[in-house]
Image 1: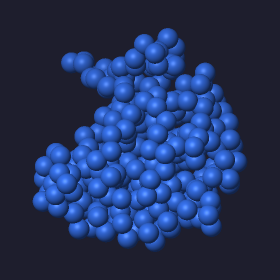
Image 2: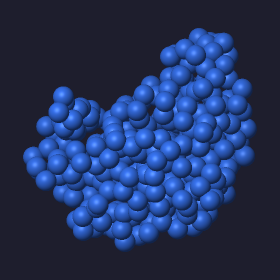
Image 3: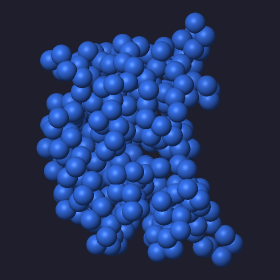
Image 4: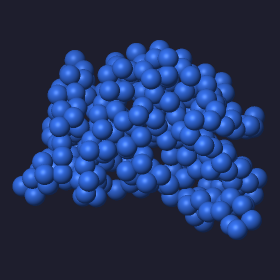
Length: 293
C-alpha cells in the first residue's frame, strides 16, 4: 500500500524547534488532537537521534499496545496460512512479543544477534538513496508510531507494525538479510536517479511485495503483503508474472491501492539467483540497457 521511504505525512520543524507531522484531512487521526500530539512527539525522538547513540524509546500508551495486540494476533493467523516458509522460520527466530509494541532498541538487539541488522529511527520522509544505501550497512530506517486506534487494520503510511512485523521478521532470516544488503550495495554503486528508481522497483516487487511458489502453492514473502491485514487475503487473485528483472524495474504501480501485478519466484533460490544477482552486479550502464530494451 505504500513505497518504502515515501511517507504521506511530511514532518516540519519551526524556528522554535516545534515538530509537526502534517496529516492529510483524510487521515484517520487528523481530527484527534491527542493522536496528533503523539505523532509529533514520536517524530521528535527520531529527529533528535544521532547515529551511534542508543535508539530512542517511545512511551506507548495502553491503547497503542492494544492496537499492536489486535493486529499482531490477526496477522499471525494469516501468516500461518499465507507466509513463505523462510519468513515463518525467521519469525520464530525473532520471537516478537504479541501483547505489546516492542521498542526499536529491543528488536535491534535481537536482529543484531541473528543477522547483524539494526534499526534507525525515521521521523518521516527518508530520501531513497539514503534509505537504500543504509541497507548496505545493515541499517533499516523505521518509523516508531502506530496507526490510529479507530482503524487498526488500515494505515495510509508505514507504521511500526509494518516496519517490525513485516520487515523485522524478514530481516531475522540470513538469506533475506543478504538480499537487503545486496540492494543497499546496488544503491551505493549506481549514480543516476533513473537507475536508483529501477533498483527501488526491483526491491518493491520482491522484498516488499514478492511471492514465491512452495509445493505448488503461492506464498508471500514481501513485507508489504505480510504486514497488510487486507492485502494478504487478496494477493493470490492478482496478476501473477514470472520473476523478471526487466519487467519489475519497468512496471508502474499505484502505492495507494492493493498491488495488481506481482512477480512469482519459483523458490527462494530462484529469487536469490535473479534478484540477488541483479543487485550484486548492476551498474548504471546495465540498468540503462534493461530499461530501454
